[in-house]
Each structure stands twice: as structure tokens, then as C-alpha cells.
Length: 250
Image 1 (cartoon, rainbow, N blue to C red):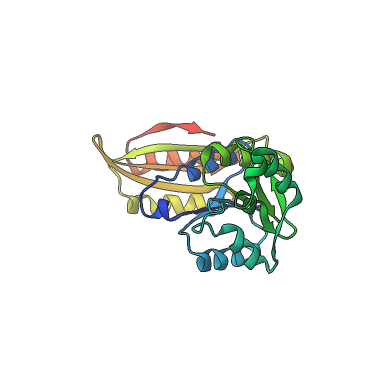
Image 2 (cartoon, rainbow, N blue to C red; image 1 turned 90 degrees about the horizontal axis):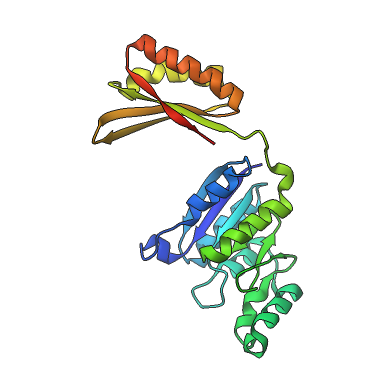
């Protein structure tokens, strides 16, 4: 299965706030042995959100969307999800009960609107203030506030996708190659990609206080990574470039 992330909000694109969701989503997925395949940032533009969701609803991707599910005029995600799905917004009975339990009479007339989801949606419990998010198919819509969104994402992953968790987790291993340009390593990289198509090769040039170097490695099944990395080390040695190991990462 493919995992994707949508991060919605003008405040992110304008620089008023720094996004923290992408890094956390990668962390939560990696802890369960799966990886993020794509991420998109969107402003508070209903047309753009509708177009994006219309496209992603047509896939089998598991998507987590952060932001825009409130009830203020700049929040468009609930309405956009309903439009993209071709269904009306409707007050979800479980969301209604949660919001009323949290706010009592003050739930009306405005806060209750946060419980209007695309018809057929399921709620995602919010342990912070009981105002739920919602799932529509394999799309999961969460608040923009990290203290709410992150435990809600964990709940979805553990309650609805536990069968996708991988116990034998992937490994990310690399070496630091000095005195080489990427062009001088391309033939070696192409050979590794051809011989180990199930692994993901990466080449990351760095320029810093210690000079220029390349972080060269692969990610994937731990056993295959070990074999491929042995060939990478041997290949770099044959080319005459100095290198050192970088610690393996989960």
C-alpha cells in the first residue's frame, strides 16, 4: 500500500508557521515498518483542495490530511472532501455526541459545524478535546494542531492498518564517500540499481565545514541492504575514493 500526506494551510505556505507534520508522519510510519511515498502542501484554496482530493480519491493510496477541518471561513477541507467525493455534508451522529459532551450548550450554533462530514464518513477520536476528525475511505482528515493530529494518526494506523505493519523493518545504510563527484559514481550506482531493483538507492551530496562528500547508500530489506552495501564499499574502493561507514538507520 502507498501512504501519502496532505498538509493544508496558508500559514504554512506563507511561512507564518513551520510545518512539523511531515517529519512526524514519516516517524510514525517508520515506527510501524512502512514508508511515506508522497507529500503535498496546499493553501486554503477550496478549488485546489477539491481537485487534489478528486485525484487521490481515485487511487488506493492511504492518505493523511492535516489542517482545515475547523468551522471558520478559511477552513475548507471538510467541504472540499464532500465535493470531491460527490456526497453532501451531514452532521455525523457520533461527532455530534462528542462535541455536545465537550461543549454542552456552547456547541451551538457554531462549534457543532465541526461535526459535519462527508456523508458516509467515520469519525477519528480526538483525545485532546473530543472534537473528532473523520475518515472517508482510506483518506483520514486530521486537525492542523500537532497535539491533536499526531495521536489521532497513531490511532488510525494501529486500529485500521495494523495488518500492514511490518515487523522485519527496513534498514537505511550508507557510506560517506570523499574526493568523488556523483558523476564518477554513476556507473556503480546504475549497476546496484540493476542488480537490486527491490532496494532504493540514494546519493546525497553535502558541502560543509569538513568539505564536500557524498552520502551513498540503499534502503530496503535488511538482508539485501547488507549484500548491496558490501558491493558498494568494494566498488568505491576499486575506484580509489576514501570512504567511511555511516551508522545504519531504521
